[in-house]
Amino acid sequence: MSKDLLDYVKKGVQSLSPYEPGRPIDEIKREYGLSEVIKLASNENPFGPSPHVQQAIADAAGQIALYPDGNGFVLKNVLAAEHDIDPSRITLGNGSNDVLCLLSQVFLGPGTNAVMSRYGFAVYSLAANGLDAEMIVAEAQASDSDMPYGHDPETLASAVNDNTRIVFIANPNNPTGTWLDADAIEGLIQRIPSHVLVVLDEAYREYLDPALRPDSRSWLDRYPNLVITRTFSKAYALAGMRVGYALSSPAIADRVNRVRQPFNVNSVGMVAAAAALSDRDHLDKTLKHNADELPRMQRELEALGCTALPSQTNFQIFDVGRHCRPVFQGLLEQGIIVRPMDGYGLPNQLRATIGTTEENNRLLAALPKALEKTA
Ligand SMILES: *Cc1c(COP(=O)(O)O)cnc(C)c1O
Image 1 (cartoon, rainbow, N blue to C red):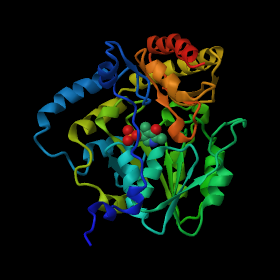
Image 2 (image 1 turned 120 degrees about the horizontal axis):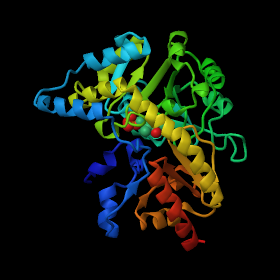
Image 3 (image 1 turned 180 degrees about the vertical axis):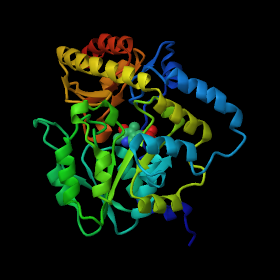
């Protein structure tokens, strides 16, 4: 009997659905014959990168015939100074997504599992299932609680069993925008056995109200099983450059380094990231704008009859009171790309990035029409 190649695809891979990214602007222009399209789908920084970054990228372009520094010496040293940590405790990644996958590769395989919250970041289960590990999903907080769909430290801690190797916690979380306070996170870390890796994904950390921003760096010294991941893709406006990193114990960094591609982070990206870190004004401008626009969007969305959930990020999910897909479609037709949340088990929710004031106004102006058409 002849054998079929595809029967040998690993079970975990067979069961995966590919990650559904935000639709690209050019694709929507082509598909709908539109000349003006805005993307509020992937939590990108609407101001773009700082002028310093653009200059640094131009300067670095001449170097791209050479392989990057595989050890990322310069960027690691900049980050080491920023976080008061030894460079041996930093792992650079091709986006923090890369770091999440590398950590999974080190700790997960058949017979093991990872734990995440329902409505947690989709990449965690892709990483785990792709390695034939199981993903245990802990129930989130109720939709009528103070923090609808947010992480529940209780269910997360009690989901851990003998085969658990990683607990993934995003704070704040994507796609919900919800957060836990510092004591709740530290309490949760304390309840996870020390032989289980805790991955605290702080992709949106910068957007947290400073009063809610945990001193997570200090936890690293108390909890050797903790890894913190950060990214340049969101507040630092470098999503297209693909640079993220992890802070951990030197031992964990060493194990990750064994499976890492030798040149996983490109040379231009590393230069851009270092330049982005040095432009504090651009970051402040980004955060100030978001702090003004997020509550305005919440009010305006509510005024249009939607329900806006609490958020401490640069995006907002909102309940449109019907299935989100036709509304998503109605916005696309008007040149506005947001993100439908049905794939996350939130069929009535859309997620929109906080854009420039003008982009936000365009969304607010287009939404009534999209809602009307689908009423
Ligand atoms: C965007 C995001 C990331 C970061 O992705 P990069 O690979 O760094 O671009 C990580 N975690 C969450 C929860 C995110 O939303």
